[in-house]
Amino acid sequence: MTSSPAADLATSTPERPTRPAPGRRRSRAGIPNRQTWRAWLLLLPGIATLAVLLVFPLYRVAELSFQDFGLRELNLGGAEWIGLDNYRQLLEDERLWEIVLPNTVVFAVVNVFLTVVFGTLVALLLFRLGPWMRGIVTTAIMAAWAVPAVTGTYVWVFIFDARRGPAMRLLDWLGLVNPETTNWFDDRLTFYSIATLNVVHHGFPFVAVTVLAGLMTVPKDVIEAATIDGASAWRRFWNITFPTLKPVFAVVTILSTIWDFKVFAQVYLMPGGDGLNREVLNMGTWSYITSFGQKEYGLGSSIAVLLTLVLLVITVLYLRVIFREEEL
Amino acid sequence: MTTRPWWSRPLTGLAVVAVLAFTLFPAYLMVSMSVDARADDGSRRLIPTDFTLDHFSFVLDEGNFTTYLRNSLLVALATVVVSGLFALLAAVAVSRFRFRFRTSVLVLVLVVQMVPMEALVIPLFVQAKDLQLLDKLLGLVVVYVAFSLPFAIWTLRGFVAAIPKDIEEAAYVDGASWGRMFWTILMPLVAPGLVATSIFSFIVAWNEFIFALTFMNDESRYTAAVGLREFFTAYDNDWGAIMAGSTLITVPVMIFFVLVQRRLSSGLVAGAVKG
Image (cartoon, rainbow over all chains, first blue to last red; front, side):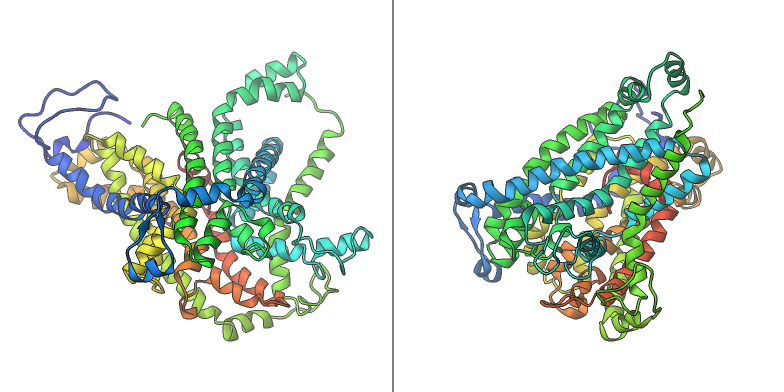
């Protein structure tokens, strides 16, 4: 981005000072000129929308988390401040430590790992292919990415449906499970294994496509030199490709972490995921069910705040990576 | 490059087949079941034997899916128009003007983009209830515009910044006003970017589940993603109907996605929203 504002020509004000060095922001105090007014006018609709619908609700959810806010308060207004009671109740709840946190954290860690590793392997595969084959596989990956979370989840639910699902019929045919007595959606581990398949399937295309774009930028001669020197593919990857693409890997890992921490629809829409089966609650579904099932909006907000704080930490990491890469 | 061992080629081929199978299996299953007369039969084959369109006519006629799809389409189109317009104005402001707090605005946009939608359902539900926006399509549009804006601003900013200043300056030399320059010079040049962000906003609105589920109580206001749940019953699921409905939801998005794949992947690294 260059420094000279194009609109200068249109709005040449007489007292214009000399231009600052390229890339530096002009920090001129005093009366805003026409150019500044125009910029803020253009920004107004967008910034106002973000302020009312994202920033204010963020404050509101924090406020609600300190209140006893139930159905009565929702309908009649007013709410009692109860300080940290919601958080106390939350942190003293065994369910948080034994069910919800492990379901959220372990699931996120496993899924991020699998998504990034599988996505990278697919990217390396795509990189080896000729332009034709690469086009076909990329299109297929895009198609998988496009499947909405809702419909994708239903298909995975069907695949593991006890009586009719192809996976269960295959396992039955192999004599590994008895479809009369097995329901993989009842058990926490199998429930989340199915969710993992779903989330990795939905998440790896982003990693594959991004890493592939990064691979294209790795200088070919360096790799060739290493190959001639006898470095194996494994060593070439860890000694050349990975260090070069570190920022790319950081971005895909952090974004996947954010997405996998707050996974909601993929769990909520599975049998029992909507609160019927308490064993499979994660932070997203717990917050939702507490608020809209039990009508304890205050308590539900405190869970949402907890989740947001976790994501905030990850976001800060993300921003540091981004800003190192790109000049604003 | 150097020669590869003899097993390299067949192994690559095998990997391609495996990736294609894993990637496409769910979508294949969805579409093939939607046209299979034996979709709900425990003995169905992976390749449909009895072709039928009954599932589609059932969901569209008796399953109210026509209404749900219409609602989804209205919400998505309104989101596209409003967020496209707001984002374009903001993108021009941050990439063509220098003013105080410009960097702060950009950082703000990037930060709010990371705010999880899921964490804001509760306050936005309360706000929407106070403003009597529940059970109204407008309520959803407002929310989706907010959630698609940061990505749209961030992406369009790149497109606007890529347009050479000389072109604009030439317009001024020819005596054009700023407004005229905006419509006749900038607009046509950022059109490809606008298409990309429009498709993105469309997908956000079309796929969204949690707000559509929370805001809409009245069945006639359901969007397609939520309406699909109607085919699930406590004891038995009508899988043929579910897959037909899913196909109707998925196919348009899939076509869009494949069309804009390149733009999406580059934009997603800078911004970050998942459809």
